[in-house]
Length: 326
Ligand code: F42
Image 1 (cartoon, rainbow, N blue to C red):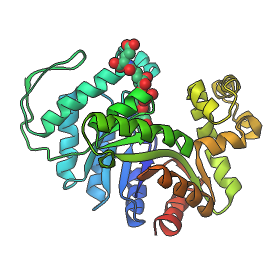
Image 2: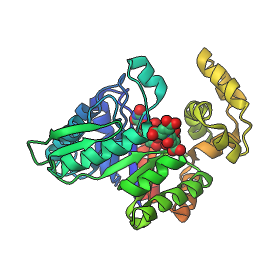
Image 3: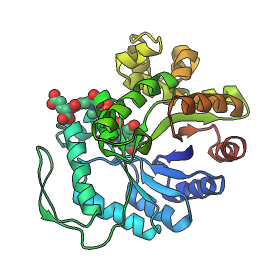
């Protein structure tokens, strides 16, 4: 099992660099930086991290194939790989329609676009001249002019077809989920995809990209995670909520409170214990350890501590290092 940590560059890059260094010292294996156009740029952030850390692997968690052409992505991640001495990982997922609508980019065929982009990027990373006439991604003899090195490619995926595709073509998959029930389904889909492609499912790193909140005080840990869980519930398909015994009508109330900025209502009861249990790894070190063990039993191979990590990020990173990784 490996341990990863996610940072969202809504925080200044130098602050993230400080946390990443601390995470490295505490034994984390991977740091994942999210990519949204309205935050600091993912590759600038990874470059600063590369210069300020020594061994932790550095991943986009995740970038997308719509705002950046596959050749540009190969060049960017290849540069991070060179600067970091071979520590780069490319995480790629299609992103979401609302974001691209706001940017005036049409979000067509997310699965096909992801699949064809990965194929092209693999070609670029292998130093090939890429000629590809896909439905969504086309190249006519483009080629990198420098050696990028061999860089693992992970997919961000939740849906059944995307998970199957990850099993077919990716080195790992970052799954936004925290509960064994979701991974039972996911691991099956990934294995089916791997078998279809003649691969060993064990060659695919299955990462729980989880809403994580740890503190010695369980209530403080839960309070820090409630707003993140509210956003997850509001954005979850009904099928996922039903899988956890949560009435999908709760989505409207929570979505309404988020839209109004009524965080008091979220904290005061709209986000229930069942929701917290379904959509976060949360509590004392013992609580978190118990959930992690359940996830490992089901086939998860990497735990990624995602937002909020804890009520106090620095203390939380140290607590994970001492009580869980150590
Ligand atoms: N998105 C970001 O924009 N930035 C991030 O930093 C980020 C981080 C992140 C981390 C982990 C993670 O799991 C996801 C993350 N995401 C992030 C979101 C990510 O980019 C993707 O949006 C998300 O993982 C994809 O969700 P999904 O697996 O549910 O896929 C969607 C697209 C879906 O609908 N999938 C369907 C499925 O069953 O899997 C398949 C849809 C399909 O087949 N479409 C056809 C096609 O070709 O695309 C077209 C069908 C037609 O009718 O045209």
